[in-house]
Image (cartoon, rainbow, N blue to C red; front, side):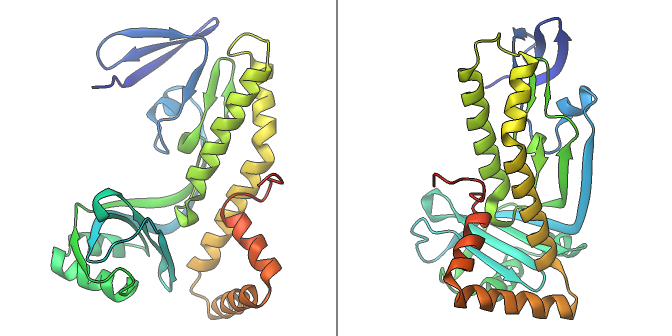
Length: 264
């Protein structure tokens, strides 16, 4: 089994990693990417900014009666977005966002009642929803690390910025961060872990991160609002996107995280 990093000790020119198999590893550059609830980030004293969404996500695997053919589905409901994402063996990963404690109620239903309620919300685009796996509930918040680079250290992925799961923006942004980091390191002749080099990576991705995080946060709050005036404006806006192809393309590019890319 892969070893897990349990502790990180700063050295003069790198980090010493203490692993779960009781071995140690010294490195010139440590890339910390252990998720939104990063214990290593906390160990290193790196603070975070949090903005709760007053929503939780229910995660489970679902087996439908009809083939998903590699398609992903996302619905914006009155209670929050829902997504079914394709997995092997015709299973789907469910991400169901609900307000308050309602996700816990859903998690505690028996399988038959849960699938009935899910079917009523999702519909029959994939036929009958036949089977559900283990259900897990996670509270949702926008979490951003207050530091992303130090000498010999980069905070990456959800450890750097944990977004609402709407539209899969967090994963796409993390891939772009990793690509930008690799290119910045390859372009530099400085030693691995050189702070000015890592700061150039941070500046290179700053605008992309700000736009992606900001867009994701605003869309989440827009579709999560229950105020009638906001709901009316939201519905009119979606109708406008159907009538204005240029606006629809712009919105789609933002939703895919391509707002700062001119080459795609």
